[in-house]
Length: 176
Ligand SMILES: CC(C)(COP(=O)(O)OP(=O)(O)OC[C@H]1O[C@@H](n2cnc3c(N)ncnc32)[C@H](O)[C@@H]1OP(=O)(O)O)[C@@H](O)C(=O)NCCC(=O)NCCS
Image (tube, rainbow, N blue to C red; front, side, top):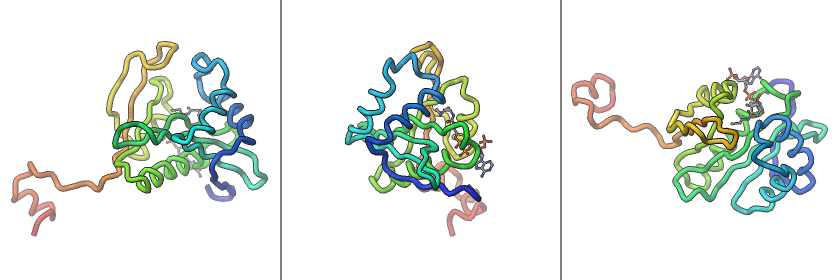
């Protein structure tokens, strides 16, 4: 994010309009949310959802992310993520996702999961580049019939594989 001064903070009610505008412009999901503003308001008021906004030095909202902490699982879920088109390719989504990972670790979750539309190559490339792995494919996930990939990034330290023969583990420097 060189040259660009972006700050991150928890979303507040005053941000509903700006978040809704970015949501409507960026996310191909208006068929699912008849009233995006009402949805955004509901999310901001929900204590189990962490909504974070990225702001420029003038306070303008450049992007947002909604994270669900009440998944009943060992992973938190990024429910919504979008960056205003004027602020894309500057690392803002990457920083928001890093924030989701930090939050997951702070709250003692093991992983971050999310769904991405099968036709959203840009977002999928970004997630996979950041270490998200394909977990599941759902042929009809979105209400318009579009398929979705469930992706997951594990935050657990990688352990040496136990099935590996001892001589290979020694060779790989995993045991003395
Ligand atoms: C997908 C989306 C959230 C990405 O936001 P973004 O802020 O542009 O993402 P980043 O800048 O972190 O990364 C985008 C690309 O820019 C690159 N990048 C990051 N920082 C950069 C920098 N300072 N300079 C140049 N490129 C940079 C990243 O490596 C990444 O490259 P890749 O596409 O080859 O992986 C955004 O395009 C968007 O809002 N799209 C519409 C809504 C959407 O699809 N949301 C996701 C739903 S699952």
